[in-house]
Length: 193
Length: 167
Image (tube, rainbow over all chains, first blue to last red; front, side):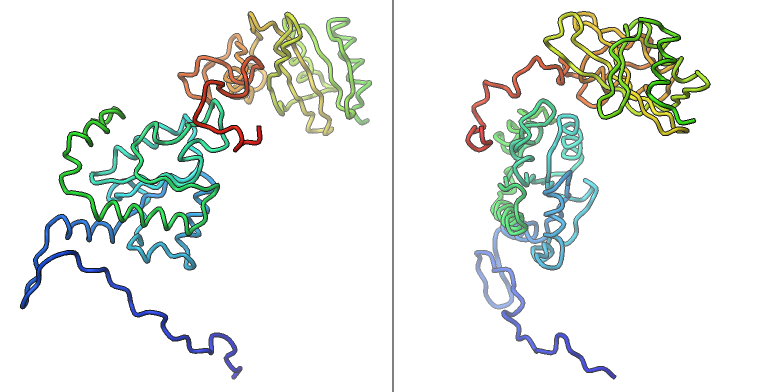
């Protein structure tokens, strides 16, 4: 029987399990009333299903973000789906060549509303160092982008920060935003619908 | 008997006389060139000749020499004799105004996509190629990007700061 030599120190919990704050509302004996916007926003933002579209080094960085050390699952993004079917957050990570542009757009089109897009790293945001004939100079030329994460490549912390900013947007989004004239005009400018 | 460069050179000159020229041996790789009209004859000879048997096309690519008037585009064939493990390099030159070279797809099936790539980047029109269209770039592209005709980047761009790129 060898003595146990690892993990023998008891580590106290640094904090209790963190809970989502309650939205603004009225509560009384046995009821709580708030707006539908708030409830839906709360649910959506804490269960974002990312669709990683990883083409290069930023994708590797995202894999580290999914790993145990950074653990993107803490933010309710446990379920990364490699299909546009039920995902609502398109994460484009890496260089997108002009020939790949239509593929990104097709994946975006196949996602159901509501959907958000995050461009991770210099290449997806602006073409980065690849200022050449073959590289798309930023994915916002083919799909609308909500959050850009700078860096080449961004550290996992930066990707988490981008995700938290997306969560912020999602939580505050009005349910009518996607029916608004402005949003329709935005999609129209990309030739969608 | 190992296949020596001198022997290959002798064989080629014996067959083609003064039509094959420019024999060099940079880093001991036998290099020669010929008129572009006889490229298939030369390749065929290198493959079929019993003592040469260069049966493998390692690579086929283009080069652009803007200062070579009338001979701007080179098409380079790298051949490999797998039995003797000997390689040679063969070049033909063509003008950029009418870059037409006979296709080697009849001799090497592997030339198919190499020639498509060379067409894609240099605009060499391979006569007789079964499916000569772009392979790596987008189909809408109306220029040949590897020709030395363009500044390295779009000079009208204002969204990228030169200082960030060390220029």
